[in-house]
Length: 507
Image (tube, rainbow, N blue to C red; front, side):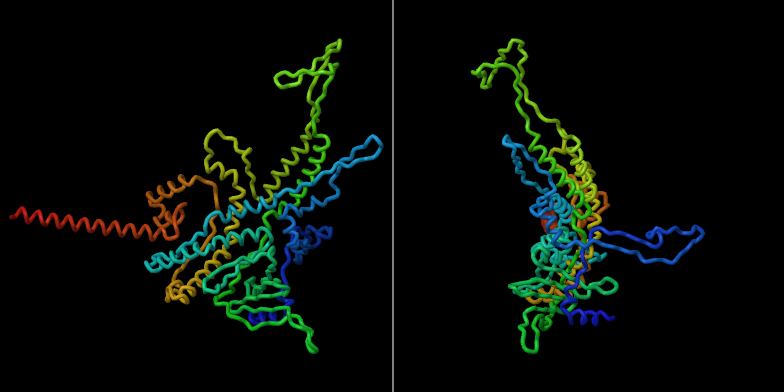
């Protein structure tokens, strides 16, 4: 089926526009005779291929929201957590009240993963082997506007939303002043993203289902128009009411202006371990509350009046045998439970590829090198490196949409009337850069050393060092031109002075 026919089919039914691939966690596999418990004849070398059988467990995005919010964790409402009761003198029983505690582990994992993936600004590269001065200037203008419009903030929020709720969208649009802007669409804010693809997996129509002022909306985008459905049709004699399709509106971009990213939430593979730790943590706290308190044990015969010495109470044993004693008794520590909790911490970090480094974990008399810290956080860095590849299509599309939208903005606002054709000649790409802990001075010194050895260019050193501005290359070239002009002026003055001296000598 042609993609235009597919789009027309989707737009003919709002229920189809709201179809969405569910999120899943866990599955059971079965394949052929082995799955049915049948033995295969060893003489048979080949057999008919069978399709895999999957049974997936659907996880709603509301479930992700509950897991991310500690105040909504299941352990807070788990009646299987034991309680402590005491038998009173009159024979009744009294239950010791205990407030259960939830651990914000999911949020910690999510924040750490977002930091390693978005800790640095977006990295832009000009792919032209010999760019002209005009192309370089336009390239700098695009990067300046990117920073000015806080596009990195939108990118960071998009990553945060996706790792929190499973999917996220970045919608590019022109505001009332004709400026290119971007806003992030999140399930937590009431936006349900429903991407529609062709047989090859390419997006042909992306829809956003939401509700505003009591009215349901479905906004759908293809590579030219925005189509809007509203569920506000008033019932009449010949009409049951419900959804109505508005006139399509051109959105002004050459491709779908909605960037959608789906994936696992940050803690997905560690959720069962986190739940186990929360249950054991609460059981441990219940036991500690009942049996974890120490007591002062005093043995012997003492006078009714006690003496004070240096602010402390002194009791003198008056018994004949003189075996009086006083000591503070504490119950034995449940070391097995403590070891299990620590072990769960390790397994959660492994499952989520996220490390938790606390101040108590740092034991060093001198400075800790950046390499040592990087090795400690190798799982975080490796996971972020995979994330760079996973998010590359998002980076490329955000770059394309922003460059095209900025060109139209500059033309419409009469700032740069040739921006559309000029920016089209700027062959640039965008890429995430993994954040790693290191010393800024050492890193910048390394760049200077590599530049001196001829292993990197001056432009690369300017782009990747830690203190450069978006127009740093232009600033450096401007200073070089000023220095050249000053040198030429000085040479001219020197030549003039030399000429004057020659004349005086001849005279």
